Amino acid sequence: MAGGAALLESEVRELIRRRGLDPAQDDSDVREIIAAAVADYDDRSLRGLVPRLDDLDLTSKELHDAISGFGPLQSYLDDPEVEEIWINEPGKVFVARHGRPELTTTLLTEEHVHDLVERMLRTSGRRLDLSTPFVDATLPGGERLHVVIPDVTRRHWAVNIRKYLVRARRLSDLVALGSLTDQAAAFLHAAVASGLNILVSGATQAGKTTMVNALGGSIPAHEHVVTCEEVFELQLAGRDVVAMQCRQPNLEGTGEIPLRRLVKEALRMRPDRLLIGEVREAEALDMLIALNAGIPGACTIHANSARDAVVKMCTLPLLAGENISDRFVVPTVAAAFDVVVHLDLDRRGHRRVAEIAAMSGRVEQGVVEISSLFERRTGELVRSDGFPPHVERFERSGFDLRDLLARR
Image (cartoon, rainbow, N blue to C red; front, side, top):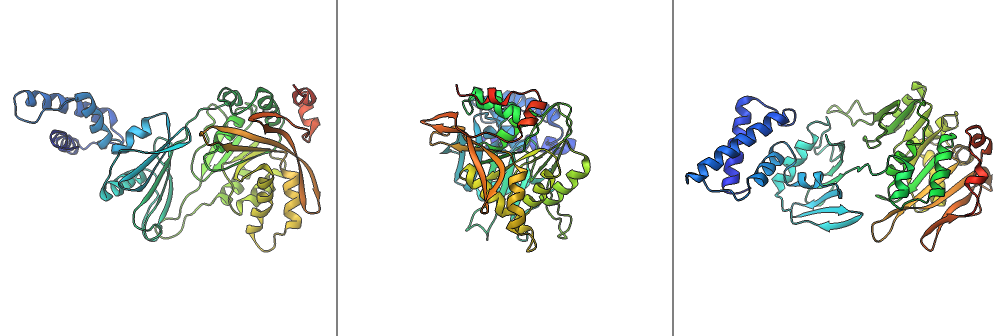
């Protein structure tokens, strides 16, 4: 802001300070002060006492964004088309719409970036300093914030804000978006309802969390669901659900709660279903143990294909310690997961299911056997030759598996 708008902002901030309001908590009072201050300013401008403002409504919104929101970034946070915001340096603010990045006209200063990050972290209880140069947090609106500072970065603070836009609460929503076919969605719904374990794979921003959220919509309503995530992203509204997220260490270096701990604690909550946001490290072992204990579930993993996802899942548990060997892990992975759903993001920014594969539970010469159920051919997701395990589970849940997978 400049000129009259800057003067008005300073006046509003002073009024808020005098009344002892917290802009983050007393939003309605702040809006009243802004409205009264803008009206008073307009009256003074008509008498020539202060510079005139061209658009009072725009000025009111910018004031609210600057005081109660996150300044110039607030408009992107409010825009339902913007999926992600990142700052490489103060003069380079990018956004992604429909999977495609674009450089914005927003220009910030170094001090402005630092102030915005401090305000974003205020409600999270997480910190950022030389001893902790990375931070992963959730904003009040549910967005995921990740920040890295020098000397890990070369010079500027690197800020990334990922918005989780709930475009799919059920698999039918993914069909409407063009990510799935009706037949594939019907099969996945039956697989979840029948208690099969599902591994969701794909690249960054391919829609893995959205897929798990949509799969969650097929979980029977009477089941007790526990979710474990680094930061809250899954949104299973209207269900019997306990959501847990990790915690960073405090200033004394204690109090950290990693994902492995969450998975272990989840097992003490008698879950009927366990959903893990993403496995990257040794927590894969704890998840495998849970799934092999008869608790159905799903998780996500970064991978380039369904086969790569299975191979990676066979590797990550080895990080848990030297006493964990592939002779234990490989057959455990084969027995733990039943279906792999692989997603991709095409050049036009469209997220779609690239392949759905079945795991038979068999291992041949150290390789987990998988077969393709659905695959992309000339851009269409079509039925392949594979067949999933646990036909009896589908039958108990009232599904005719052969009819679901019949070629059409």
